Length: 360
Image (tube, rainbow, N blue to C red; front, side, top):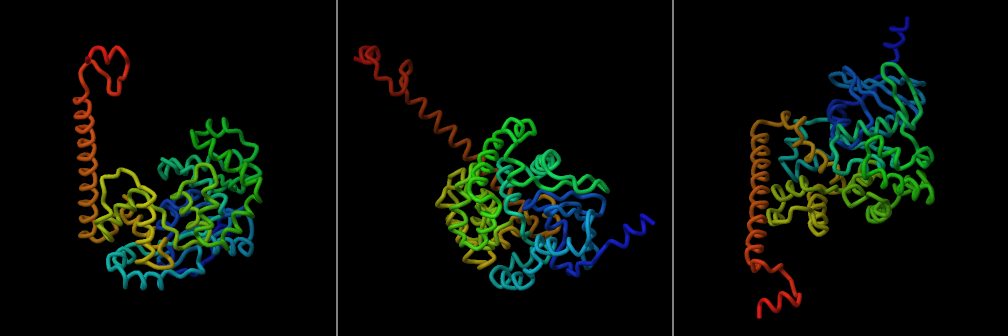
């Protein structure tokens, strides 16, 4: 009887394969709260716990701690199902045949509409981190300070809200493994609680991108990239384009080779130029296009691309590695040459009386 009830709880979302694939959407680095369990994806939205499962041409859902009637609207909102992918794919294909090839090889990758507080905390945590470690840290945070929602098939917790995290000491976050980010998280939570809490973040959905970024940049641990991630993945800013060295390299290769410089990091000028190039080419949903291009070169998705495109990307990656090595060698040689110009026994910039007497 229990097994039969388990089966009858499944509900078809009625979403075509080209509009949503779970592995494409939940594991590409835009969210960190979903766990793979067999052929299911388990996670929480608010205080609703879900199991999701793909079929050949649909996605099935069951709620693990409530009714489908209550659980379906938040899920549809989270999955951003009001935004169909296909019109955007057609528009991007007209502007970029390569992106059309990628979209065909990687169907159903879409941008989520996450809770902005969870998204903000997640991307502060993402600094100098990888997807697996970010996921584990945030699972610890849920287990320690969230609400237990269900125990079968896994223990699933809600994400703690800003009030729950307000009482968590920096040292406790460090003990969990957040490291230097612990201070950023604590200060961000405090500032948010002083200025309207989660409701304040939700109000940013009504503001233009520039105003949203200005507000987000006021939080500790939030730079331009994190601000754009939060804007894109939770605040309806579809034209937000997070830029890092990987995205900069994509822009150099596909848009404007003159962007390539001997800089090892993304300067504010480069950041803005790259984001503008994406917006010029892909329009109002440039951030969605950006995420597809970014994911295409991740190890878990690269094998899905046509062989010729895989080889192109691998060659470009190898070329970048070689360029980094060469740049490092050039810097080392320049430093050695500068050191050789300093008179032996005299430190560069030494203006002491003893040094002057020795040289006179």
